[in-house]
Image: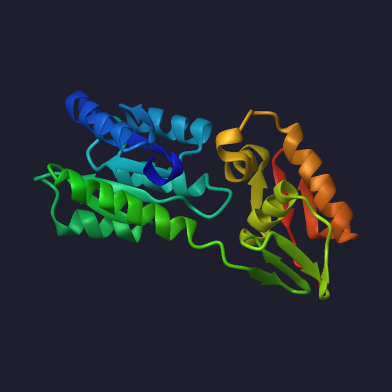
Length: 228
């Protein structure tokens, strides 16, 4: 399976190239969504919450930089990787523009299949990072060990609430939606029920003792705040 079944959005107006990319990515084990215009790509990005986006530089309705800026402005958590797909008519200046506007990397059309997949895997690895322990003030969260300690005292917390707390803490200060938390924590077990997130938040708050660590942002989701 490609990066544990990661979701990839392909924004490509050329039907043949879109179909080719779809086939290569699905055979590699990815879940793939295809948009044939910039506007459709922005909509699907908000609906599907992909782990990575491949964006064609030349689209019929929107400039790729405009699409990229829109995707970045709409991100409520750590921005996901966007790989710009360039063709023969795109020179180094286009690649530089994409990188300056937040693109993770660029791919050239006709790139060798193995290199194409390797670039995608590298971008996903870099974005996801490792699962090493993180400290936020008096709080230490170690997902590998499955432990959460506060002031040196280990808290009694089940795995799902622990992972939810870890993801919120990684995005310290940023609002993370319930939908995003479902994708981050429940992954392949994702059932679409936001109540699962609320129950996990309740458990985490109860274990922490102070609800101020996890703030509710009405109508959006939750935000982690480091307490002294």
